[in-house]
Amino acid sequence: FGVPGGGSTPPVSGGGSLFDSDTSLSAGFMLKAEARYGDFGLLLDGAWARLSTDASGREVLFASASADTDLGFATAALTWRLPIDDPLLVRGFVGARIFFADIQLHFEPGVLPEADPSGDDTWADPVLGAVVRYSFTDAFYASVLGDVGGFDVSSRITWQVYGCLLSTSPSPR
Image 1: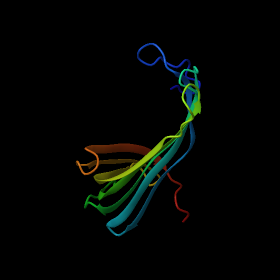
Image 2 (image 1 turned 60 degrees about the horizontal axis):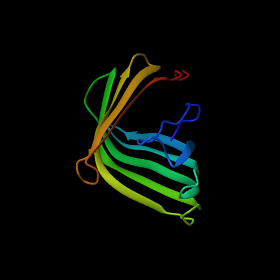
Image 3 (image 1 turned 120 degrees about the vertical axis):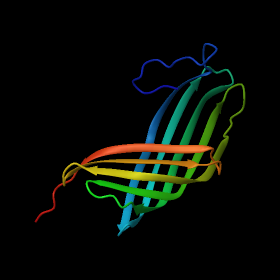
């Protein structure tokens, strides 16, 4: 597989591949939302991406192949604010994350007949985490979210960490 504009595709171990392929991101989105009331809240987080792969064969087994792969997750968690004063804000959370993967393959006939295998899977895991926010000024802050999950429920272990620097417009007075 290769990345557009990334040069030549590295060979598969053994010195070559039955297919020359290109994979591209066809569509995707990310969402993070929070609703809070007092010290408690609800955190929603999710992402979805569709990858499309087209491969031209060397007409050994199949003339060509294509794959559409959907990957994503959605998280819902209850949050609570820890009793720490400004400029630091820490909110812990506990919830669940659902993962899904779906792949649709299509092989054009070559030596072998046309084939359209597909498969999908969905699984859920508990997650524990925290959001840490530090306000440098009223309009500029840094935020980091991190969590760990799985705990051998469906996955052995899962984790994510992401951060951002944000600037907001001051409220009109």
